[in-house]
Length: 172
Image (cartoon, rainbow, N blue to C red; front, side, top):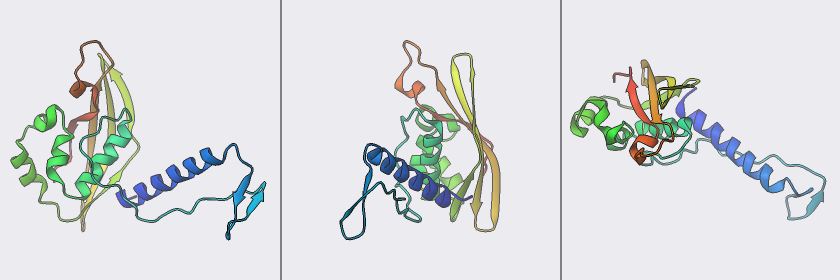
């Protein structure tokens, strides 16, 4: 499943959840033409191919949300933003932003397939490992992305507390 398809499905689920929440205390649904119908239920209309814009590295507590934001930045070829998802504001990639941009800008039309992630804890840190495949035209680049953050400990900096890319086997 490509990034666009996954994000479209996530958007539809979000819309359905919001509609369900708002209608949970209400037995009526407004029909076409503006008339209320008691006891009916309606499924929300989902949009197709709606993608959020790339955002700066997330401070979300949800590693999957951070990964999807990173994937969006990759699909938009927003290399400085992609770089910023690495730990230490990109330095953990082992490259400067210019080197990183040169390496990743080889991708022409990247789309990402993101597998099921798994979270583990070890020695005061949390890790989230996910299989990811970059699809770039006819080329497929399989690999793994590992996100990391420290547990909520006294003295931890915001940079340490945010989910960030710790490592990847993806090589564009």
